[in-house]
Length: 295
Image (tube, rainbow, N blue to C red; front, side, top):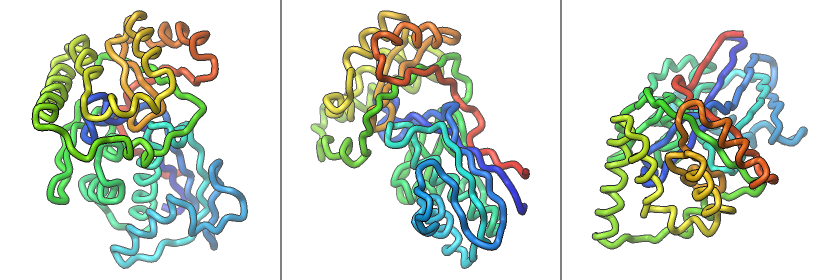
């Protein structure tokens, strides 16, 4: 294709106790319009004019994948638009990784399978919890063992989300640094049980129990909550207004509430005055993941 569009959804990972293994694609998007031309050029809201194209993160990913197949990428004009906020815990880097892999696939005519794309993305990201839903859509339960990704997609969820996005950024590295290097055997077993029950409840549509378990995470939220503005306030007031449960999105600082279908707008209205400096928005699950279209 000489001109094509790539669209990749944002994602919310961990979802409480699903640490590094549970992620949900949501309807915020990174979109690229790619057109072949005689030189590389990126038009991007996060990329200063005059910056060498080689420094663009998406180009680096595309070249890395192409190099592994011995391919040279044809130069292109890449126009980027996005509704995915950067460094807010909504998978902006994962979306960019998937977009870069797809550019390599299209320009290099690699004919990569979804499993191969997921393998590349997970190796780059280090874990599949964001890249898997960004690629595949839905709610993805995944694991990365012995350099192999195994996953299960849950695409039938009768619920909506509300995202509370503050103006401040939080780098994943900073959020990782507050986590313990080891967990006591008793704590790890309990945390694992909570995670297992969360997923089982989601599969059965028992969202009340799922929300209750989400809020009992022991893997990361107890250590990160001090980094998250209004953590306790959001959880308390969201529950008062009908949310099943609220969790840190990825590493934060965004939080998300899981709410009954059709109730997200009500919750958004309740928080307009409570969090005037936040972007509080309703979200839905994206069931499709990566989309590529000729334009």
